[in-house]
Amino acid sequence: MVTVENHIGKISVSENYITEIVRHAVCDCFGVADVCNVSTFRSAVSSMTGGRLFKRRGVKIRFDKDGGLVIDLHIKVTYGTNISAAVNSITHKVSFIVEEAVGVDVHKINVFVDDMNY
Image (cartoon, rainbow, N blue to C red; front, side, top):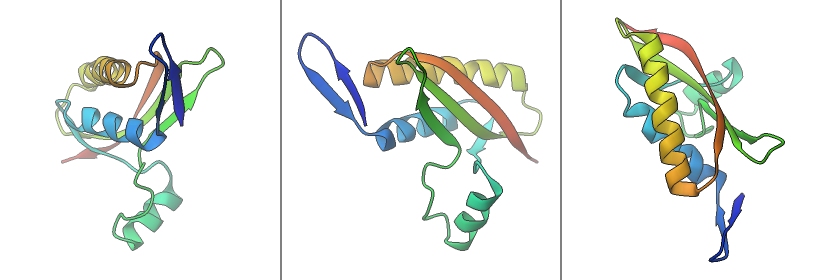
C-alpha cells in the first residue's frame, strides 16, 4: 500500500493498481511485444496455471530510502526495434504516468530486455 499525504489529506493506493498502470503504459509503447515473467519458477507456474497466478509478472515495485519508487521491468521487444529508443520511451512514459496518477516520485526505472518476438 502506498500512502501519499498532501494538503488535502491522505491517499492510499494499492500496489496492484500501480503495477497495472505500469503494465498498460509499457505495453502501449512502440516496439514492446509483452511484459515477461520475472523468474523461471514464476514462468513455469504461470504457464501451468494459464497465467492466472503471478499477475504482477514482469513488474516489480519497491521504495528506495528517500521514499521514491524504483520500478524493475522485464519486457519482450519486437524484432528490429531500436532497443535504446524503446527503453528511453518506456522510462519517460512510465515515469510520467505513475507520477501523474499516484503523485509519488519515480526515482529509477530499470528495464531488462528478456526476450525478442520474431
